[in-house]
Image 1 (cartoon, rainbow, N blue to C red):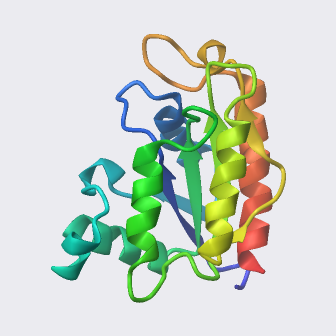
Image 2: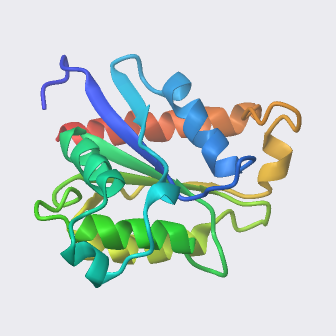
Length: 186
């Protein structure tokens, strides 16, 4: 992809919680991205029903189709997720299960970056490891580094506004976005 063409990325949030640190990171991404990169939110994965092949046989839910089409049109995807029980949240796994069954697999050949935040010290690293396994099956081009793994997230956000305020974390995310943009343009 030519460097002079603006890059269009979409962000998928693996949390439904209103006060989610990961959702707050996703909201901060457009302001941390290089000037030639647009980052747009995808719809909520909370709109997806639980995956059931009987439901799929009746047709894909509109929210699944819309998100799949948005991913397919994008130049890359950023997944921002918490860690639940040493893995990805069930709602994120459910979304990937639905999206993986679309006739034109939207993740195939698509550059994907992963970010995670957690109140714990490990910052979601185990969720990232499990997510990478699923992305291999989806034939995504998973970005390797720099990794964004934000531990002790509670100290990096304004408690009242939910805004990501930690300068070092903001700078590190900006560095990842710069490197991911170059990766996505290859």
